[in-house]
Image (cartoon, rainbow, N blue to C red):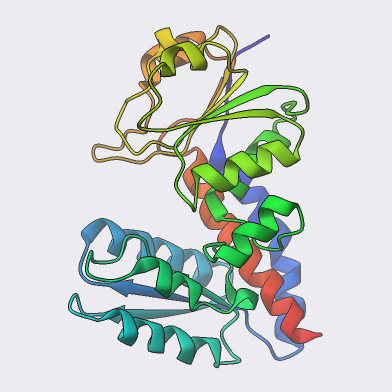
Length: 279
């Protein structure tokens, strides 16, 4: 089998192309799909991500509202802002940029998002529905990983997938999506004591640990499929790309792998939400 570099830009472009006619149809009915992004504080990386999402909306002719709150914003003030957006019928999706400042209860803020506008799949209701197989808006990065596997026609059914990471918006939901697609799933984390031995058994590896170049090629089985959901300082992911590339049959680069598909998925789910409002 030839080695495949899983190009996220190609997959993202396919998603965006599929949205163009849907957006035009909504506009003819007097409705512009609108994503509201909330940024609390002045984290430079978060500012960059929010700007990227806003620009992606504009390129497709969608509306983007950017709400920038000061660092000292309280949890209750953030929740009030979210409720205002919940009640704004021109807003179809709400994204609270992660992470928020440490004094804010992020989970309380996530839970304040109306499930109909939870296009980033961060509420416990959205997660539960995703895990049970009927969620409308799964977390965008997990959904992006599944879309990449689908686009490249990589078999999931019957394969052993190892997910390294257990965050509520990445590791846990992608484990659920893979399980629903009939993979056998092992979820590892910071307290897993024999990670290299477990990874040696994996047909599919999802790296979502948040540590730069953490997973080494020597830990992997020859011919495994590697999806790197990490993005760290220096434009590197959670895998040691050079050594993992040597053993993988398919691998996502960083940048240009999972990231572009995550943003395209966010736009797609916002359009889907707008379509429900137009009915």
